[in-house]
Length: 569
Ligand code: ADP
Ligand code: MG
Ligand code: ZN
Image 1 (cartoon, rainbow, N blue to C red):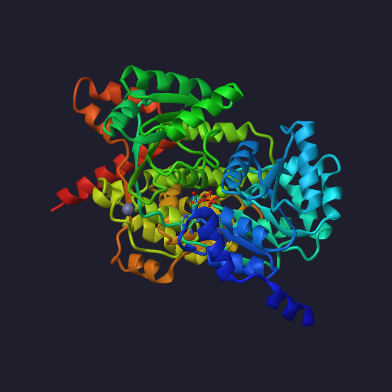
Image 2: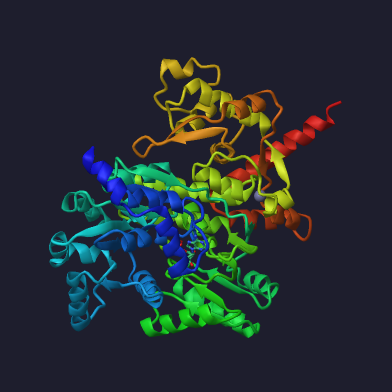
C-alpha cells in the first residue's frame, strides 16, 4: 500500500510526458490511446497495447524510458528497424543505442560504457541477442526503467509472423521483477492477444486496443489475369508524381516489375532480401527522400519504414493474411491524407497460399489456424462487404458503419442473392448449438456426416442443403462469418461455428436483411458470349482452382433455378 502510494507520488506525470513529446518529437499532443498507455507505464504497471501501424507505438515506451530512472530496454525483431529508430532518436538528442550482431566490438564496448555510467536512456536489442552471450546477465545488475517488446505478435504462433526467439522473452518477467513491461503490436486478434499475455507473463497487464480505422485509406481489390504487370503499370501511371509501394510475392518478380515500370517512364526501385545490404540501404534512402518514387518490393520491405507521403500501396500478389494486408496497406497515407490500397488477386494465388502452408513444418492446429487466415483473406477480397468494415470486424471491433469510399461501397458488385441458403445455414448453426466446426456444419447441411449421432440426424436441418456443392456452402459460410452473422470461437485450433449477432440473424431469418454472394468470374461469363463459348468456358474452368470451379457450377445452377422460377407463370 505504502509502496504503491509512494510510487504514484514519485512517478513522472503525464504533463511531463506531453512536454517531452513536444520538445523531442515536436508533436503537439498525444493521440489515440498513447496517453493512457504511457500513464500506465509511468505508474510502474504492465500493459499490452494494440495500436494501428503508424499509430505511434514507439513513444509509448520511449517517453517512459526517458522519464523514469534507469535504462529502457527495447526488444525489436529486426536489426533494420532498430537501427532506424536509434538513428532518429539520436538525431533528436535522445541517448539511445543498440546491441546486435552487427555492432563491431569497439562500438559494443562504448555502448556498455554508456549503459554502466547511466548515460543511456534506451537500449535496443534483438530477441536472439538477449538469449545469447551474457547480455541478460549483465542487464540484471542494472536498474531498468521499462521493458518494451515491440512487434509482440511475433511471440504467438497464432499471429502472422511467429519468431521462436520471442518465446524466450517470457523469462524477462522473472529476471526483472517490478520493472513495468509493455508489449506493443499493430496486429493481434483476440486469440493472439491472449497468447501474448500468457507467453510474456502479462496476465495482469491492462490492455489497450485502439480502433483499426484508417479513414484516409481508400481500399479496393480486383481479380487479376496472370502476372498483373500490365495492370500495375496502368494503376501506377494513373497516379503520376505520387510515391507508392508495390508488393510482389517473389524476389525475381520485384526486379521484373520494376523493369516494366521503368520502361513506362516511372521511377521504380526493386527491393528484396536477396540484394546486397548496401544496395538495400541506398534504395531505401532514395525512396524516402524522393518526391515521387515507386518501391517494388517483397515483404522484406516495410516494418518500420516511415515515409509519410506514400500515396498508394498496390499488392501485385496478395498478402498472406488480413493482418499482413492491414500492416502493408497501412504504410500508405501516414500523413493522414487520402491514399489508395489496391489488391490484385486470383484463384491461383489462393491455391498457392494453401499449397505453401501444406509444405510447411508446423503443428496441425497451427496449420489449421493459418489456413483459416488464408480463407478469411480471400473471403474478404471476394466478399460483398465494405472492405474497411470487414477488416475492422476481423480485428474484433464492433462496428457496422460502411466506409463509404471503398470499391464495394462505391459500386456494389453484381451478386447472387443467397438469403435462402443463408437462412438454412444459420438455422443449422443454431440447431448444432455451436458444438461443431465449419466442416461439420457443411456436412450437416449436405447430410453427408460420417458417424452421425442420433442427436444430429434428428435435427430438422439435417441434409436440408443437398442442392449446393460443399464449396458453395463453405463460401457462403465465409460470407456469413464476414458479415458477423456467424462467428467462430477459438477452440484449440478447431474453431467452433456459432450464431453471430442475434439481431442481424433475426433480420435474415425474417428476410428483412438479404445476404448476397459476389457473382464470380464475370470475365468468364463475358467470354462465353463471343467466339467458341463452350470450349473457352471449359478451358478457363480447367485453369481455375477446383474449389472455384465448383462454386462457379453452383452459382450457375442457382441462376438457372432462379431463371426457371421466374418463367413459371
Ligand atoms: P508505429 O510503431 O505505431 O507504427 P511509430 O511509433 O513508428 O508508429 O510512429 C509513426 C509516426 O507517428 C512517427 O513519425 C511518430 O513520430 C509519429 N507520432 C507518434 N506520436 C505522435 C503524435 N502524438 N502526434 C503526431 N505524430 C506522432
Ligand atoms: Mg513500430
Ligand atoms: Zn467501404
